[in-house]
Amino acid sequence: MAAENTLTFTDGAFDQDVLKSETPVLVDFWAPWCGPCKAMGPTIDALATEYVGKVKIGKLNTDDNPGTAMRYGIRGIPTLLLFKGGQVVDQRVGAMPKPEVLKMIEPHLAKVSS
View: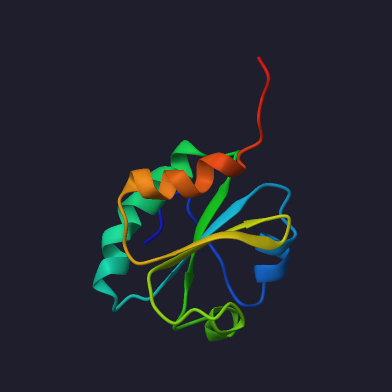
């Protein structure tokens, strides 16, 4: 079950929810039978809460949405793709700790002057 701020992406709405997004989007490709995917769940949920309004963060179940997984050549899960401006700007395969996921996200955040 996804946390409150973690989005659920689907084949049908992927273009609208991800590719046309004004903000960067981190997509976690996963499946319910995948142990490492389940291990990544709390990290993804925590980041979705921490980065609300800055980055859209969500999950795409590859069993239920095989079209998008095929479209992006997802061969192993978990796979994280970071989209910005409708393009993949970073990709990582395999479970990873939160600091590694942050290394994907941080360079793509809008710089805010103080």
